[in-house]
Image (cartoon, rainbow, N blue to C red; front, side, top):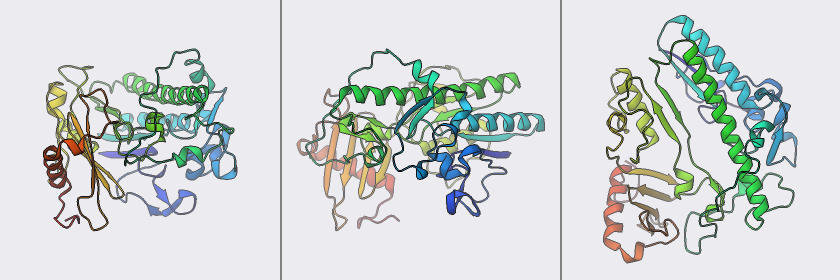
Length: 364
């Protein structure tokens, strides 16, 4: 396979580290890509590109960088339009080569700052937004935080937690960023069809995390709540028996590697921890499994019904637990751990099994 990555695939757009993330001697994923172009354009370097606003504005060069922006112009006045243009060029070249390829395209939006061509924001003007679910700050011990990344941008002195009009404005900008990103995906799908590649190309659209838009009084990620951890995942594979049918199965992002291998007829490496999603693609009602995530000294396990969050003690002891029932109306606002100690123990054991933890709490 020819492997090409365009945009933000690993942590830095372009896949390099060092000053401004542009040092060719510092490669984030050595040997992974035959090519990894980054069309930085007026943003000049990958670091400026990552948090860039319209027409080359760079966050590090402005002490009061706006959180929200919408500027008239083509898609390419923001970084994601440049990523799409480069991806289409790569796709045409890959098609002409008549060799199997793996093309990864990493669009940045929706990501702070929330900026996009204005016509995408106009699409959401006047749209009634649903109320923010459970907008109150949790009263008990949780993974809540004060949204430092979000409030590091300029909001003109406004706080969406106590200003409903501004909260709606932020949410509309976020929705417009999603629409902007969706339009970029559409351009790639259209080019696949134009090149007659759509019938034998597997397409995966996914995100690396979710995002709080006021739930639990958080505006950002980095919690272990559902809003932060649940991410988009869409798979289109030629010959799917039930295309377009959603699956409610709990799966993990590490399942994508073995899934792509299985769908492509490639041997699945024996060192992978994920599981192929071919059963769910064949039968959307097929069950999933449990999913784990972790941050700092906290770990979580999600089943099809419950979420367990464990805060480890300083001595690596079991510490403190949060347990939430997703079949109840309260969701992740009512910690029921104290009322269900047996279930906490059962889920904690599953969490340990998945993380392969020793009794002392260290990774094997």
